Amino acid sequence: MIPENYIVQKFYEYNGGVKYSKFQRTYQGSCFICKEGKSWLKKKRCYYLLEKRVVCCHNCGWYSGAVDWLKEVTGMSFNQLLEDSKGFDITPSSLTEVTDKKNIVIPDLPQDSINLLDKSQILFHRHNKILKVALQVLIKRRLLYAINKPKTFWLSLVDYVHKDRLVIPFYNRDNKISYYQTRSILPNDTRPKYLSKLNTQKSLYGIDSIDSSADNIFIFEGPINACFMKNGVAVCGIQEDSKSSFTQLQKMQLLAFPLHTKIWVLDSQWIDDASLSKSSILLDQNEKVFIWPRSVGTSFKDFNDIAIEREDNEILSDFVIANTYEGLKGKMKLAEIKRSRK
Image 1 (tube, rainbow, N blue to C red):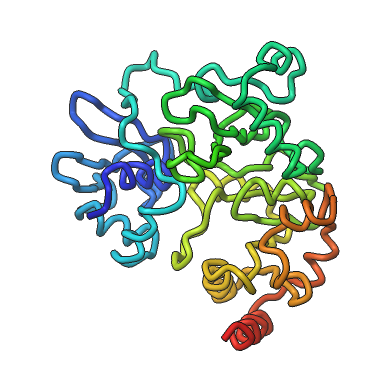
Image 2: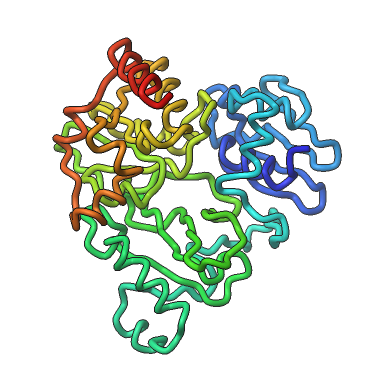
């Protein structure tokens, strides 16, 4: 069975301006399927009824069980959804629910977050063992020096969900934190490797740092790899077999850069099965995809691995552009990798 918290998270990701009514036990937002006609975010006529596990839209007439709705918006089969719900970026179920009261504000960051780039805060917490681990992770992964790092990194020692995890903020074009991911840093952390901000649609990491005069935008799966490339953004996770790659908000953010060439940069297709599969889907969608050359792709899984090994703060865009393919040429390159991996 698909977990309830997974369905709720996807409802927030795909629909716009979602709110929760505790009294009616329903979620309400702008419909991803019909886009509310021309009234996206002005009208909110799509509902998820918790008691019945039904999604319905009073504009386009969509009515189905939650799983059938998930299959429609993600392009995934039931088995793929079931597998995906076990893995990346699942919001825990035991969280405080957001009501439709106007005075409820979702915090920008986890509770009592410590700015890991603020010397005065570091000095105050200098004896804390978890803080020392977080700083060691930043240094080891060269995140303090990365060319496209966020303006801040954070750590909460008390947050119910995100306690003792590295907080990676996603700034928007207004220089405000609109989203965040937290990453495990302790070996005994049994929670998923990545967790996300609750009740908020995913935005793009790095959208605040886009150089409008550049020619390309490089789309990564996760923010850590995007840190090492100028004009790198991250979608915050991919679904291996899904035709859907962006949330509605992420699509709108990219629409602000219509003249930029978008190039997908996933993990090495020589090592990662999900990347190999997703690259093929992207090529079928006429997307441009960076395909790792054998000389590098068999030794490194991602850009962070390269940066650590070579002590680099930036991966040059020329390397990506020289190995970017689309259409039939890209499919042929992937076919070579598949044959070599057998």
